[in-house]
Length: 66
Image (cartoon, rainbow, N blue to C red; front, side):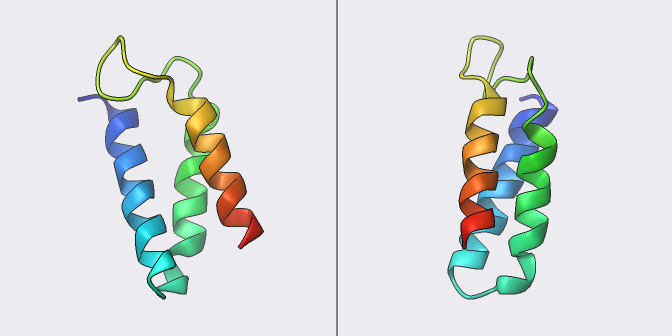
């Protein structure tokens, strides 16, 4: 499991906490996804997995809108 996968999972967990009312972690989740948005070579799960950057950009954008 690569570093990008671990960071993405952290962002998802923080985002879930924010959705459950823990608004103090919303900015941290957004920051995690924003940093991953530039990880053009990063992949989820394995080398052949889906790219991290497009998913991270979508999640960061969603968090910004809330």
